[in-house]
Length: 320
Image (cartoon, rainbow, N blue to C red; front, side, top):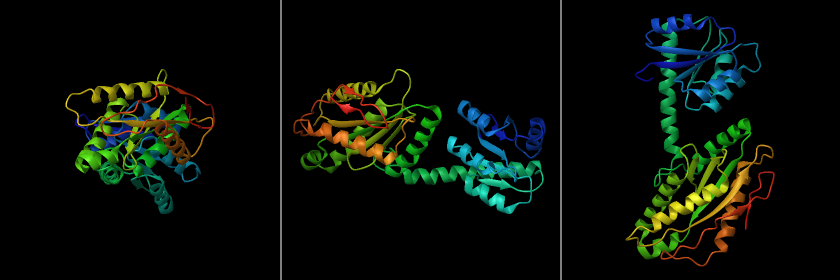
């Protein structure tokens, strides 16, 4: 909850008017509350895409077989917004299923009063913040502060679901830091760690905040980038090369950073499993690495500047 107030998304087809709910929440101690109502899940998803909410209230009908699916869809679309489910009936089994579907709190029975609702919303927000903090500890790489393999796997699947809904392709970019062993052997493991940290900074500098950037192995990094108009794979290759060149041109460097890269596509018209996409990009990265001259900490092999697309079924473009 921010200092400017609490913004709540109410997803309910037959709930009474929003003014009554605002009055109940205000009387319960929730000041400066703003409630936005969606009459169905589809409208709720649109609102979540357009605005930031502190919490969701989702009314469940015990006779609606899609009620729990609604919670799952809303949760997957906005993982940072906690959900309080309202069942309207004394159905403990439905309440348990709602929690398992992704709600942080569930209020069963007749319409709850203001204080009860406010407590449920506050508990949901606090519990969700704690869960997110604990989850982040398990999903982030200690050295680089990028996502680790588990974090990548978790967020990438959500990213691909979003690509399916938006009918957009996703670029899956596998990046390997060349010559890490030579850096460790000649300059020490501390310098090797600094090379990994600099590679992570380079990727942050190159890609967008909305892209998923992760370190999934010792010298292996991966980026998942949702494609937008005017940003094809050549854009990322060129931008990464330019940023890499600028870093290597800085005076006083003890070695030059060298990277190998492979790019695979996820196409929602021809879906494929995430692991297959990862394997394909990995194979293309090693294919590029094999074409380079032997590298050392003192020299950077040239990166390719152009790729040609091969077509369909989530298959990666082949390097020229």
